[in-house]
Image: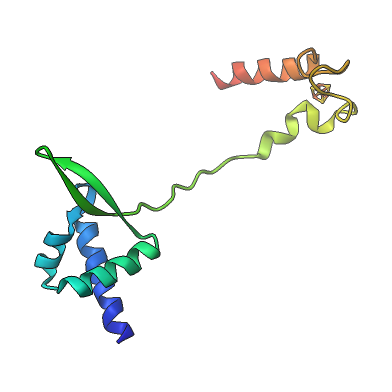
Length: 124
Ligand code: SF4
């Protein structure tokens, strides 16, 4: 029982994936896969709970159509922290005293200003 339910989920997932950015309405999904609406709705609900698909309303020819789309994989963003140690604050003996409005402040710090200016020039 579980395996057939899972295979319906796989079929529906593949069909939605094939539709790509256009998405696919439930009616078309049911028709193309030859499923009954109860089976399709159950499998869709499971896929939605797993957050692998999403439902969105789109305007087509003046009509609002509800379609299913694949949820895209989250984009991995790599941040290089190799040079973070070069920020003067990490090795500053005044770090605990430093703050906006204090005698020692990032707004008046020559070390921080030099670091920022050097890195702005280096980036361009
Ligand atoms: S801003 Fe300047 S004084 Fe403040 S912690 Fe950073 S390097 Fe030290």
